[in-house]
Image (cartoon, rainbow, N blue to C red):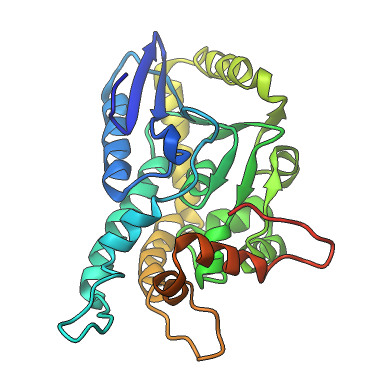
Amino acid sequence: MTTDPVVVEKDGAIARLVLNRPEKSNALTFGDADFLVDRLHELEDDDEVKVIILKGRGRSFCAGHDFNDVVEVYGLNKRDENGRHVRMNQRTRLKIDRRLAEGYMAFQYAAKPVIAQVQGACVGFGIYLAELVDLVVCADTARFSHAEQRLGFAGNTWHLNTLLLQYGPKKVREMLLFGSEFDGTEAAGLGLANISVPEDQLDKTTEDWARRVAQNPKDALVTGKAIHQMALDSLGATQQFQRGFVGHTLGTNLSFDKDEFNFFRTRREHGTKAAYRQRDARFRDEAGVTDAE
């Protein structure tokens, strides 16, 4: 079996982009994300392909970015000769975040329809993809959340106008301030998923939807997608990605008061798992709802 982080499969007019890090719940490094976007562009250029299914191998669709890679890329463990933590300069962070924004935009502006097939964890980078593609078919047991917001973003995200259109302003504020988890049936009710089905029907349902999309003429699919994108742009979609990457740079370089929870400081002192546990414990409500790490 290939060790590539993303596998491409083709079946006539239907192509599949398969996230291939099942041992990491398909959490992707920054390099993996670039690899994914490159494969997307290849399928856009393949004239045989009408529709693309985006899915994850194993128990989860995508658990976000690989956090060890995030720490490395942003230099979060870097120290000077005296052992003091050193922050990356803003110009380097902006360069990194602009590339991330371009990767997210590639899915919103894909030339062909993309269907996300979602099971298990769909968090951070994973939920961004689900929110940006054309259609989402999910398992009833899928677990969605913007838990990344608990790192200190509190509403600062890449594609906020897309979220406002999907969920409405008040719901967006709730989702991003709390980062709470919701399942597939709730995702369908919120408008994130088009349909939620029992997990044993997920493959069949997604393939059926892809075949139905592929009944359309090639020119019609590409033209319809282009007009859809123009409508999004009339609502400020591209400008929001520009604001989003600047916002991400600011949001990943916050100053914390002494009595405020600092995930990255906690991680350095106690380790990643302990930091996630402390982060999420602060958001659990009195009813005993437990959010996934």
